[in-house]
Image (tube, one colour):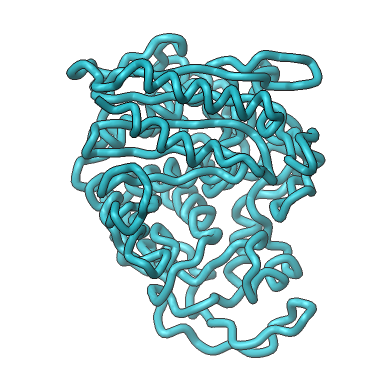
Length: 420
């Protein structure tokens, strides 16, 4: 499928506010202690100085007002290009929340029920099999019929039995042997082709009986294409990006914005420019999303964005589906999305809802935060969270994989310790 680039550009421009100014609806004065917020600066600057990260952008919005938005270090070390607030990052699995919202917009329009079998709309996934045994080469030697079909809600909660090629499971070699990819590619291939390959593979377990992170959201992205009749990038642009004024979020960057893409590093005995193969996630080209065929739209990993754009997206979710007079989802849909559905860690601290990890028990979780906080991150060191109790959202972005720095998780502690 080909994207009508002119149409998308017009749609994005039509809904945009200037990227240097927030237009979140103002609330009460943010309850932060300024000198404690300065601790965020100290921690991030220390990571840059130590050579653990090249740079970063951090953003916090409370009560509808941006209270912290700063850039640090370099977007590219070799050229000494400073990191800017509008630098563009590969957000990888932070794409999943966007795809989840796209699915829910179609659900709200009455195209399907969440408990429908995915095979009702994508017949190749009918009659799934569960893996029993596989040989060392990745050849499946035995399967059994699954107890039931995969439902759309199983895909939203990563409880379908589908995994990822980069994750070590009994299916890892099976996927690679059969041409199933993680979702980041410069090759001239389309989502429909890879999803057809995925449909031929067995599941890790019976749908609904466990939790396993996987290509569920890529399949949901394909569902969006099938139901809407549009390429995923076009549907995102029309239904999400344009209404929210997200003018810097794309699967593949236009040439005019390519110079704002942050260099991807690998922390291998110090930071080196990534060649794409230093970690379990193999990029065909570490220049993704600037170079390549631009035909594969991964609903689970493919987007690049700015901290500002993504903050607008998650502020919409915090605000029960609406931002600046633009309603993307109904409040009951957002309520369902952030509701715990399946235990993802077997200790009762964190569950998975529809598209997010949800903190169910702050005591068991054992870190600063709030009960009901929901969040996720991306493979290249980007993180976000949404806290309804504190009326707060936050985004942290840097670019490294593999990474040794823990600043993405310590950022959350630094934000919460600064509350009045």
